[in-house]
Length: 510
Ligand code: ADP
Ligand code: MG
Image 1 (tube, protein in one colour):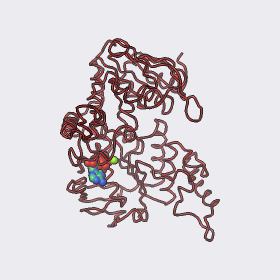
Image 2 (cartoon, rainbow, N blue to C red):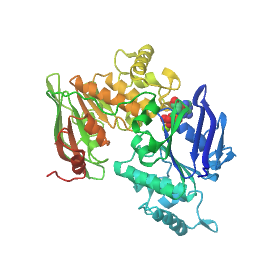
Image 3 (cartoon, helix red, strand yellow):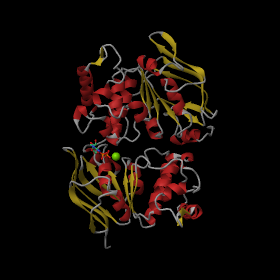
Image 4 (cartoon, rainbow, N blue to C red):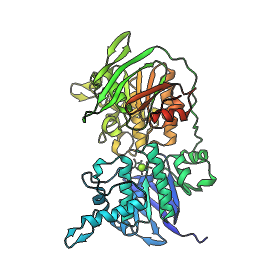
């Protein structure tokens, strides 16, 4: 077959200051294929795609699109070359309809005015062609995350893009939405599009990609044929060493009760009861998993325990130093001071301050305490020491060392910083909300080991995750939630994944 290339990036270098984010990298993507870009957090994947999309200028190197040399000086040039991109964080105008978002800047006009009906119809035609199950006239603010992503895809299709870039498209999706997206990607390929997909999820690469280029520290390590390469091999190429996927968990007897949760309920702003009366007990020396499809009451539970949001009724009794302490609706800082630590689901809202550097973020939990605060001045040396300790102990990598601002760090390294800081509090109860979301496999292995260590030291972990495999591998007991209701508490040793899936779908086990 006469292979033609949709994208050729040759000897590409991109520096931020003196730091080489992309270092003499090469990438060749064949027309009409799905090409995965695999690399650890911070490897340079997004930077590379932003170069291809014209967000950044190259320092060195050459780009060819459909075998012609081009200079992609800004995203408009990329559009004209038929390149489209779905970003990690969507760029939609929430109060606008689907049709308005899709056609923004390319509206069908009648005289000076936008012909709204024609515009909506033309968008609906594409929606139907791809079975996207959307109404062009719906406001984007009323759509789920998965549906919003489809609007981003529609935008690319409306602009007749032929080279479609997806930057970590499944990070925020439910398992079902992920399957739908992967099917869409295969459908787009059947229509002759060329697709670049960035992901750290090996099963996704296996499901859709023809070839995969592995990137490490800004350099291309290899490009492999996906069908001929095992997941183990892909992981090894990515992190540069063998990675173990199986979680080594020692059998362990759980200890005494630490948290006794009784009949807690939560009602949201619309008056809907999002958590129905729920009761369970968490013991010392166990990982207590909370499983469910996104939005079925799990977040209400973990935010209730950590004090991030209120419960309407019920009690949460914490057995701390031989005392029974009611922590329901207690202030979050007070709860944290009693060694209940939290790795929050939303890193940017609750986990780090993006414009603070590493020492400042490392000290967020301590800054107001005596040994950190000297008068109103913070003890800078203490903060730096703590920041450095976390960097060393948790293998945190950042572009400008200790003084890096967290905004410039990759998601995985931000997560390591949060986990390091929370472990530094010696948690009696560690609440981990989606601790490995958007984190690469090397770091996932590391995070799993840390959670197990907390358990093995006779403390408790509450693990809320949408990754069912992760819950099953790590947990000693699993609470399964459906529609704000506890469907049961199961022991993963005696329950199959299928049975847990049924409970998640609201079906009782026979
Ligand atoms: P990936 O997408 O593979 O996780 P990125 O391309 O986002 O990685 O980042 C690669 C490296 O470049 C990281 O070390 C990151 O901290 C750094 N970096 C990314 N964007 C910038 C920027 N605008 N300024 C400085 N450093 C950056
Ligand atoms: Mg990225």
